[in-house]
Image 1 (cartoon, rainbow, N blue to C red):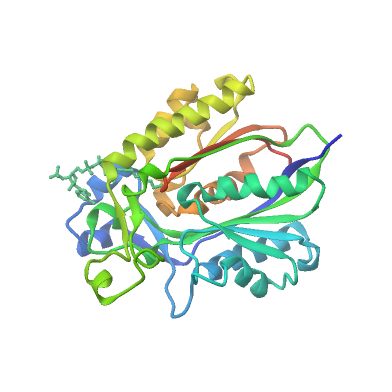
Image 2 (image 1 turned 30 degrees about the vertical axis):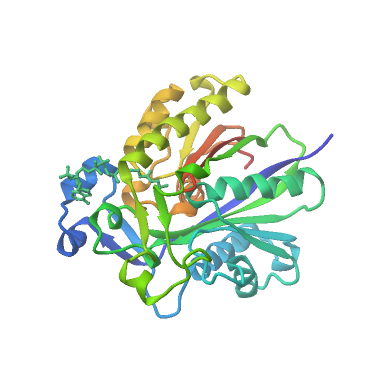
Length: 328
Ligand SMILES: CC(C)(COP(=O)(O)OP(=O)(O)OC[C@H]1O[C@@H](n2cnc3c(N)ncnc32)[C@H](O)[C@@H]1OP(=O)(O)O)[C@@H](O)C(=O)NCCC(=O)NCCS
């Protein structure tokens, strides 16, 4: 019998500095009332410090994961990092994380699928376990969104925060682990949520900086409509094809972009909000880190065998869902 891949450990890290709605009120024309009612966000953590990038937070999450699971760096056979805010265009942030955590001479690479990045990375990582190629794979989702957010643009700066979360994947022959996965994309959504400059199409110039093209641009309402439909549809689809009713699902683990999008998804799945992991009020949207940070925050409430649906939506557009049975 082929093994399935199971999450056998989870760890999260957010930086110390807390950016509150009250502080944002002093920076842009916004209010705690607007941010809370439209998004559900109260505060977010921001990484401060010269020369610290996404790898700093990701390495903290991976170090915590190795310590918690009693795993030596030398046992790890592959590390995948999902991020949209890599330290550099190259080398990859995954390479840097391995260097910082003592994981030597193994395959490591980044995967970029914006807010769906962790679902994509988990799907990829699980294949290496299922085929029998590797026995210990680390998947980390990490983003320093504060590096690309324009703190003069009230339509985006209230939404995002920084953080990292990591999981260990190992084989299991029990009736637990990752059972099904759907990943999707539609590049025709590229102009609605984009960092226009800094890549090969518009390398950074004085002009791109003046136009503020190195920051996140988002057409919020268009993204909102697409997100509500696709996150709900893909969650319903993965339930249907695995013959799951709402009452079979212990937890929805949604990407944390907007509380209203999460509520619409839960509603479509027939779940009350008491079975939805929610930490958007504390962290905002940490892009690839939202789902592992949810698992880390809610771990004490999870039981072995619980049916979890992970669902995400993000720039690209990208979206997807994973059905897993909690294995620890
Ligand atoms: C960004 C978002 C919260 C905006 O909420 P919304 O209800 O769509 O609000 P709108 O963008 O229509 O703006 C409504 C009004 O609030 C204003 N507004 C926008 N941001 C504001 C802020 N931070 N504070 C106060 N007012 C704000 C707008 O300018 C607009 O004013 P107008 O009516 O005078 O033009 C919402 O569109 C959203 O969550 N989008 C999807 C985000 C997402 O999922 N991204 C995916 C990343 S993974």
